[in-house]
Image (cartoon, rainbow, N blue to C red):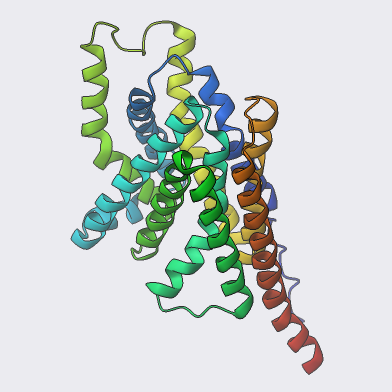
Length: 304
């Protein structure tokens, strides 16, 4: 008699938690809006490292971290990915500060489609006709934005390309999400400390230490960086990629709604048309992923 298999816990709560935190991150940036964006990114890196180290110790991932530190190729790739993620953090923070919320949201709508395109061009993966259609519609949307909202296009493309290329580099190295982020934070620690020291030497002084309340929220930046990434890593192990890919669009959707409601940002016609093309492309993309995930199940059912 075969033992009853132990049911695996669902990854859905972890996935929802990660993308909800990322989606509502602009509200956190409102709280720390007194901190210059460049300085905030520096502090975010500084406080992310101890949080990551603590979680690595709790999850007993120190052997994986040590193995990555001993691999020169891994370190070189993580050096490049750390520069990309720092760029992504700064541009996103600056965009929210400047109330370019729709541009930030659009960047993360474009990102999944860009990942598909990068996989085709770099990793030689094959695209289905539906996926090519989705990429084409997204390209039309970006072209419309380029003609009607050129001043914000660079924000969306920088966010999409920096995070898309970041994911591509991370895909090339045998290191988990959390140990990888720990090493990236360590590599960025010296320039981050330099940024914090530079602001401390200016007439305005450092933002950290001005008030206990502001200092607390600056420190929380490390938590808001490490925790959702850990939740994402847990979800990725427990969920199908198609399911996780669908939930991925929750974060930019929340940011878009915040742009309409909290930030009261005017939606330009070019942006509205671009979002319409992007949402149509994403609908085709998600439908194609869902159909492919269902195909093996149907084939298995017909074969029984």
